[in-house]
Length: 186
Image (cartoon, rainbow, N blue to C red; front, side, top):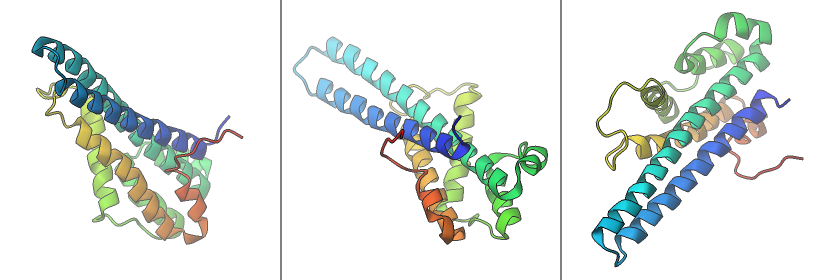
């Protein structure tokens, strides 16, 4: 069974792969729209590619959030202990975990006014819009918030890992391994 660090890395790779697939679908839309095909055919093909791209964006957003949730939970278990984490940390919202857990573990906090924390708050808000869907008129349209949110989610992971590297310079490899692009299952 994989540890949470490996799981958070796995989730990040899924988020990144979906962003890449999103871009491939958007390129297909551009090719179709610039083709000599009849308008009805362009509409039909581009519509499907747009839909597929938005599915990729949703997956990237959700998996970016899952990556950060797995990371902070593993970090808490490593520094505060499994029992303490389960009893006192597990039910806290993720934004608070990113402030409280390092403070308890090493007496330092991430920068609450920094880009990483701001991106985390936006990521969780956007993820909640998707997971707890109520109604949004532009959810599956060109004007959707999904593409911007997808980029924000991936950046949130990288920026928060950079902040944790600053808090723990002795564990740099641990944090830089989360946003890893290469596959290795050795």
